[in-house]
Image 1 (tube, rainbow, N blue to C red):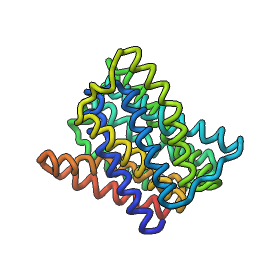
Image 2: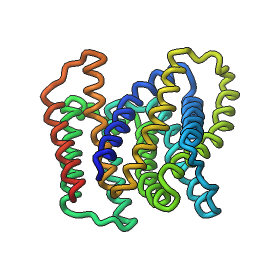
Image 3: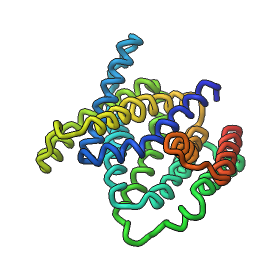
Image 4: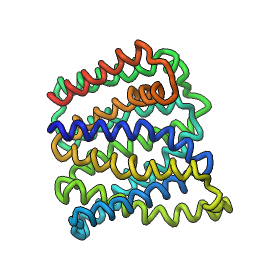
Length: 292
């Protein structure tokens, strides 16, 4: 994988590591599906500006690719963001963080079904990175995991994580045919279009005016749209152009360590030995998987 692709992946997972904080800020002032819809509208506008600046407008896809893009827009944009946001309202942070670790595993299994070879080195790398994430989370966080009382939220979070795995594997296949920039851009734009009426129905059902959203929440939504739904996916799929889905997906394990580091820098939380050891295990797992 080229060095630029590795840097791009790290930038993407850094944005995504902050997304949980931004989402919590946004949903305190706006309904969840509206937050998902607004962030997609912002990211869709960013892609339009991106194409205009580069002067490389994507070609209109044929019926087969258009059907695939519509399906991907469900898996990786509107439904993924909406279900995850709703799910986080009904489960604990500990449960959500545990289920989030299944993402790269789902990518490995789905990629294997799609024909990517799963070598022993790749499997060991993913396992090592997973162990690093669990070390970062620590015994205290892991012991807070509960199966009872949060079933609704747990199921929704797990579904959203699995959706991203499917989106990664099938999105790579479509991106190889139409180009990563066209695939992720058109997918986001389609997702924004069909999320507009969904958000409108939610606003009408709750009699919630957009004018009541606070400036702080708008800032959080703008951050989600520009970085987490535009730059992050763009960098992610540009990296998928140069590597297998399994090798790119394992980078998602860098999100928990980055989240902890971000909390330490901005919130003054202490960095413990578990973060250092876990981060090293994650980096080692990524290194081994890339060379598998």
